[in-house]
Length: 119
Image 1 (cartoon, rainbow, N blue to C red):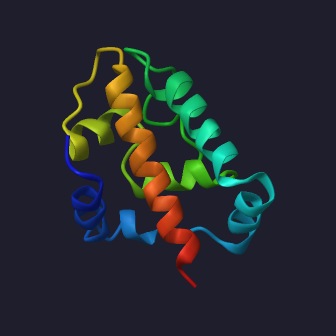
Image 2 (image 1 turned 180 degrees about the vertical axis):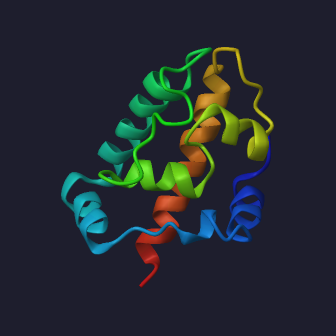
């Protein structure tokens, strides 16, 4: 698995991945709920929607809007097992390990924190 800084740099060069940004609505949601709550949401979404061996509706399980974590997942290529394999070299058709889930959440949270500073 790549270092957080390295993968975020790599993803920033993708026109598609770099098109995702948090809007004021999502930034306000983060302020209202607190970053710890957002991280708990990320852990929950990853464990339920991405971690199973064959996630339900894989490739379509992550909405494009509605929560800062969903937007971050698309920006960081952690939205489905295909993107996880392509960008992060995490194999499909197996349950994600605890270490892999921690890695994914770490990247999502790093991207969110970077976006919070963006104006």
